[in-house]
Image 1: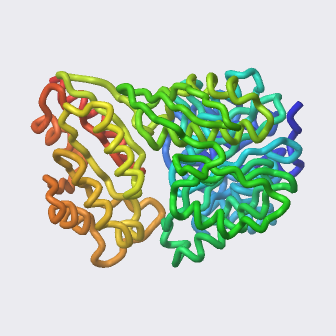
Image 2: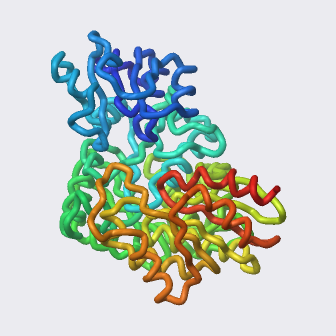
Image 3: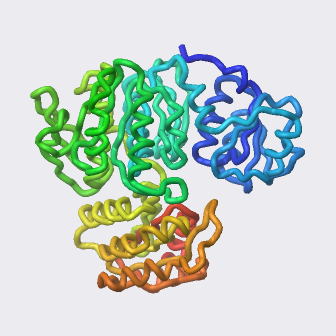
Length: 464
């Protein structure tokens, strides 16, 4: 039986309740019986879903939205100090709780799996959530994206396992005490919070150090940053380290990955035995994520052959190479990729899945700081496409940085031989793409901002 509601979470108020991470926690608390309220900047399907569950959701931010009897105010790192609801919380002496602390409180008393890494967290967490549910283990989970199957980013289960996406961007993953931690990769990102790779490694080491005694670290044997992290934490004698990947030294070794259209067949060697299973999404990186999920489940004592079969039931997460539709013989697919490594992986996956198709990309850079540090690499990644349209930078939580624009990416792409153009008015993109696309082409909308909204509009233009 899952634990109840922490006292501080009986009447929580969420600022930014519609966000991926915030809404998941709010959903779990609502299902546990808490009186949940909150606000968000705009109306959304997520806000309506929360209302359906019984939460009170206000649109817009105003001091009056915060009830006097709220037991806490939950915030993410994106909430600014001058938010009127946060200011009112201070006036009323209502405790302010970071999203990660709220999530940590929900995991107490459960067998937690925390999934970390610069890329692949949402997919791997989702794979575990789907597989454990398929096996009848009724897990709780909190994910940074909506599953394509159940169509939600969180669940309150009655089972003993809690699977959580662990965010390194603001060091909040250091709040968790997992029984099993997964580290998929370690790369420099989130430049507003990390100045160097040493700071990244220190942060991940702290995360690994929070694994409970006799717990397990599941870590990539292939990715350079993860290998270096493994070297640094090998002396943590209370933690078992299980490596996975294509390296000959991996504890869970990938023998072969065979891509079959939009699926993959994976064969691993585990405890000296070969095990083959299907991954129902395209791309080598997703196959490796599935192997990480397999290793984590086995670390909890779940039979490998049962888990391998259940992993095949995973059909994807919204915005992770999600097919939005087809019109005039053109398929439109949506990708959340916004870091060069992610962009390259998704573009290569699309190439592998449809090698004869022409690939057109609509890319929206995410964050000025990321573009400043990685814009050249983003442009080089776009050289994998046949043609690309690059939008202006999506600022999210950041203020502009003088001189940093999407031109940095465009120039790097052109230097790499890419066919790329700038479109500054996002509303023009559907018309531009409809004029470029031909039957048999693939169109990929890519980025972590609102570029995802363009998929249906492109399909509409293609149909007209």
